Image (cartoon, rainbow, N blue to C red):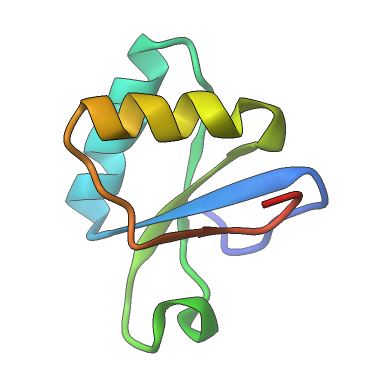
Length: 81
């Protein structure tokens, strides 16, 4: 797990570690590679939250898969987002 991201990498803030791992599993079944990271507290309004990082090229796909799975991220940021 890491808490940094690079240019071209987007981040979806999920919330708990359990939900982030569930979202990662769902995205993996859709052939979308992600990493669970600790979300930057300045982006989450403070407190502890976890996120998924992924290639911004997959942004539309990630949003669609998560929406269809009933997962509503707290926000998206980074890379090209």
